[in-house]
Length: 61
Image 1 (cartoon, one colour):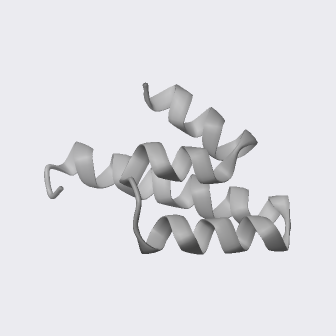
Image 2: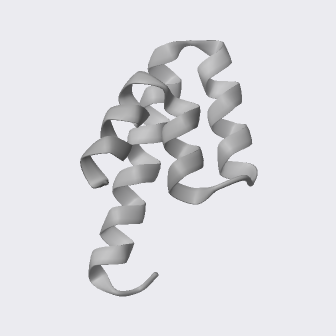
């Protein structure tokens, strides 16, 4: 599932963020960044997925 989230974050940034954190301000920010361009949305989505995985692996989330 982790690989799928990273791939979706790269290809379809809002979907990757939605599957990672659900509906919330992070998703809205990602949609706005994706509307500005694919690259800003993808960078933000990869960052969100990576931070979520890091927090999950360290046991703080």
